[in-house]
Image (cartoon, rainbow, N blue to C red; front, side, top):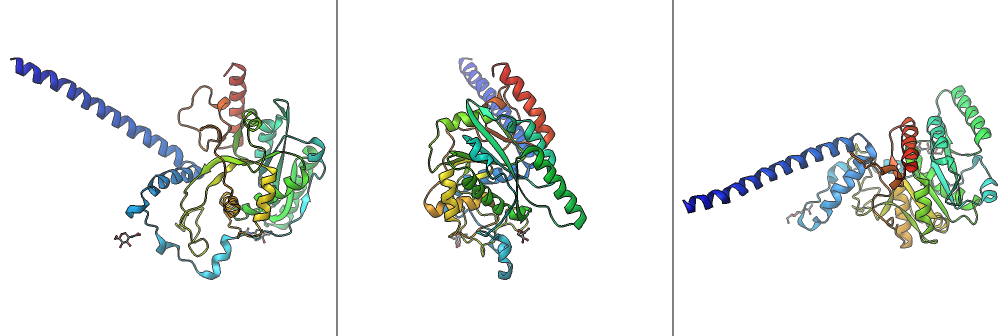
Length: 362
Ligand SMILES: *[C@@H]1O[C@H](CO)[C@@H](O)[C@H](O)[C@H]1NC(C)=O
Ligand SMILES: *[C@@H]1O[C@H](CO)[C@@H](O)[C@H](O)[C@H]1NC(C)=O
C-alpha cells in the first residue's frame, strides 16, 4: 500500500512534467514557425536570418559541417566583371547643394540613397524622421542621393528628370550623380555618399547612411552619439562571420572566382549605419586599394579590414533592428533606433504611433 502510493506519487509529477515539456515544445515550434514566416516575407530579413543560422553553424566548422556548394559557383571568368562596379571613378553631381551643409553645421547628417522615381518614400521621410531638424539641442539635416533614372523611352526619362529638378527647387535636399541608378550600382552610390559628406560638410562629426524604407528614431540616435567615440567609429547592426553566398539564385551571390574567401570580415548591415567623418575619409582612401564588389555594405567592411579597423557594436542590443518583432512591446518605437518597414504609408502610420507613445511617457 505504502509502496504503491509512493510509486503513484512519484509517477504523477513525472507525467505532469512530461505534459509541460510537450506544451513547451509545441509553443516553441509555433513561435519558430511564426518567426520564419515573418522573416521570409522580407528579403533583407531572410538575409539576416541566413546570417544568424549560418553563424551558429560556423562555430562547428571543424567537424565538416560547413560544406559550400562550390560546384554551383563556377562562373565564366569573362563574366566576373559583373560583380564589381566602376569605382573609384570621377562621377559628377548634376544636382548639388554645395554650401548648405557647411552653413548649417549639423551634428549629424542623414544620407538616404533612393531611386529618382521613388518620390513617395522621400515625401514620407520628409513628413516623419527628416522633419526633426533640432533634436536635443543638436542640428540634424538630411539629403537624398539619386543616380540617373534607368534608360527607357527617352522622353519619359526627360519628364522624370524635370520632376526631380522641380522637387529639388522645392526642398533643397536632393543630390544626384551621373551613374545609372540600379541595384548593382549601390556600391557607387554609397561611396558617393561618403565623398559628398566629407567634402561638403567640413567640421561635421557624424553621418548616417540609412535606407529609404526605414523607421528612424532620431532622438535615440542623437542620444547614443552624444556618448559615442568621436573618431574612427562606425556602428549599426554588425554581421560577424557572415558566409559568402555561393547560391547563384541569391540576390547576394558572389562566386569564388570573384571572392575566394568563404566568410566576410565584420561589416555593418546596409539598412542603417552611423560613422564619424574622419573614418569616411579613411574608407575613401582605402577604396583605392580594394576592388569594389557590388554588395555595398560588404564593400565597406572590406575597406575597413584593409585598414585593420572594425565596426563597433551599438551600446546596447535591440537599437538597430532589421525586422519588426512579431509581438512588440507598447514602447517599441520609443526604444529602438532603426527598423525596416514595408511601405511609405507604414512609415506615416508608425510615426503617428511613435509620437503618441512618446507623449504618453513611453
Ligand atoms: C570532410 O571530412 C572528410 C573526411 O575527414 C574529408 O575527406 C572531406 O574532404 C571533408 N570535407 C570538407 C568539405 O571539409
Ligand atoms: C552602373 O553605372 C555605370 C555608370 O553610369 C553604368 O555604365 C553601368 O551600366 C551601371 N551598371 C549597372 C549594372 O547598372
